[in-house]
Length: 101
Image (cartoon, rainbow, N blue to C red; front, side):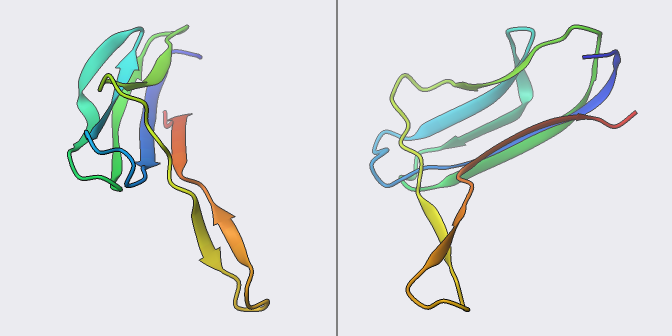
């Protein structure tokens, strides 16, 4: 990773099996960021967040589960209108980091 401004974002969809809630936070070089976090106490929810951050060369950006429980990710699908009875799989988790300038 080169020095610069980066857009860091995530989207996570969980199942109803996550009864105790879920929470995710972005970390830069193993330091949790106050901005860039998402929490939910509602089972089967979606969380998303992101930020634009100045990062020095060699930085490490990660997405952390900050609740001490296993997270079950939802299986998402969109019906295929051209072939009834089938569907297109959709991502249940997205994690993007890209340099903006």
